[in-house]
Length: 457
Image (cartoon, rainbow, N blue to C red; front, top):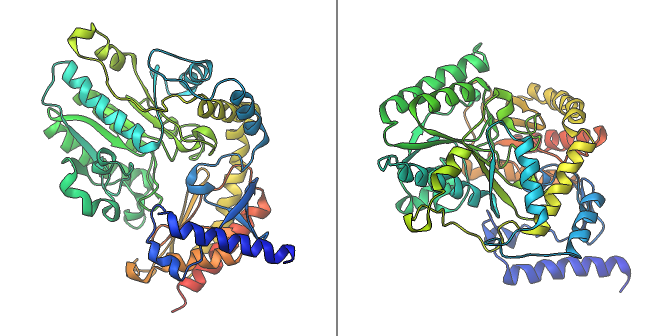
């Protein structure tokens, strides 16, 4: 068997082995009876490579986690150095330098007033921590009726039961509703729904009136409001104006309600600032971080909160006010080392500033798709660009979801060497920050060809 045949055999063999034992996330596994599983051998920079040597431009950062490319030598070196010292230690009663340094650096970078870090190991877990911590805070402070949460329509906060309860994407939530706590849902400030000629700011302000009324009526019951600042990512990359966050912070303070900012997807430069809350100049009571925190290397999440929150749990043991939430891999040293290396790249490479011309170039490239007869909007927030298409451009009538038009784009882009993973009828680009102009050109070209193929009948 020659080398080419051997690699093809390795790929098909690995895919077959996978399908006999693995259950993949967010996937109808029956699809793989006709849709080949792609076995990846290696990654370098913004590219993935399969066993036959075919390469795929990772335009979605492998589910939004990869910031500085696959096999980044600086993050690799940090992990190798840490691996020779300490791989893990229990984080109850023990500590280690990577977790302490990471906490210090995150607090220095985060919006003012966030002064304590609580570690978990994925985004959903971080949301669970914030929800429980907010609820528990009010119990410890003598406000036992504050047990409810407010979320936005079309929001997504994760797949565990608490996170799922405060989300609002029916595709994920519908079946599990009997298991979930009841929440209050305010209309989304999603500016896709603004009137013709209405600005993003005006629409977001108009939508905030619903939140204002809800808090005025229900604040005695509400522990916290949870939002994805600026971009509702899993809800179709729908975006809104920072003024909504400004007003929300003011209202939460006025009504005595916590504000939880879920920046798991939008943090670490995705919106053009290190944290999305910076666009509005606000500080939440809880800031949830994960995904890009480790540069896409290892699972890690953290909830940053205030001294006031911390003080509500600080008491004699016998008063039973401690926050008894734990994960076996809390504060894992290897994950913390990867996060520290990631933050170091942000600092030494001036990443936020260097991303600005890239974001502008990507937006210009994608802008030409607005002329397509089925594209209804091209929108951007920092390094996130989304292209929405519909059956009818004028009325925005959507294609029936059963037709899976987005899957046609996925398959078409793979054939062109680009990994795109549309959300329904939204194609989006959320690439690693190391992409160059030619790679951004290729991403947009693949999307353009895919949209044409998906809407040609």
